[in-house]
Image: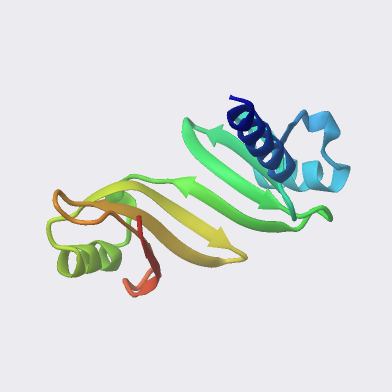
Length: 146
């Protein structure tokens, strides 16, 4: 029992060390300024301190977003939940041809300094789930079996 409690305590400390939820008042002013300048009328705003940046999760028009901003206020990346029908035609075609029979789950649009990619989770009965990042032209940027 002591080993189990020790292991649980260790995991709790590790998770607390890698991400800390914060009130917006605890976030540096340049980070908040970037957020407020870039995103108008956000709702359900939640801040976290990660190892090398701040992460803010929020909604705009009931659509989930996540922004990563460094301590100087530089916007690193914005993730936006999208519908699978909002994926570019080239990405949809690539999924249909390269991942026949897979269903699209949780598509997201990533904007990293103007470089756009689309992440999708692909699921198929009897096959390993896939997480695939596509470029707008339908080419695979990165993939990982899940």
